Structures are given as C-alpha cells and as structure tokens.
Image (cartoon, rainbow, N blue to C red):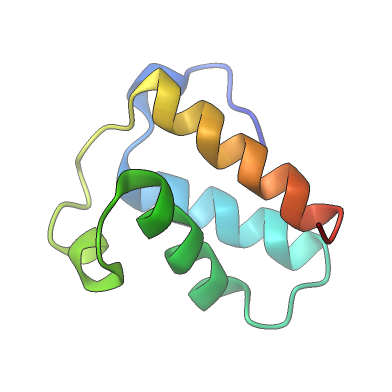
Amino acid sequence: MRSDNTKDITVSEALCLTESALLEAGTLEAQVEAQWILAEVLGLKRFELFLWPDKKLTGEEWDRLDEIHLARQQRC
C-alpha cells in the first residue's frame, strides 16, 4: 500500500488506498474497515474523516497506517 509520495496523501486518498488494499486482501467490509483504521491512526472519530478530506497525513501517520494495514492483511 506504500506510496512513493507520502507527503501529498490526503485523508480522502488514504481512505481510497486503504479500501482498495483491503478489497484485494479479501475483506468484505473494506470501506467501513478502512474508515475505522484511518480514524484510529489519526485519532479521530469516523465521521470526522469526512470533515477534513483534504488534510494531509504526516509521515508518521502514513507509517502507522501502513503498519496496521500489513497486520490486518496478515489477519493479526
């Protein structure tokens, strides 16, 4: 799921990337799960993701999202 240009990843883009990765991994509720994962990473409530779709993720947030995604993909 890692992107080469992580400095420019917005909440909206991160949601799409996470959902796509979860779909590829066979997750049935990929959209909702992507929202929960990203909300956890950003320390937000799920609905708040849609208030700031253009907020850019920090490198640390992107790394944490990537970690969680990899663990989820391995079903940990």
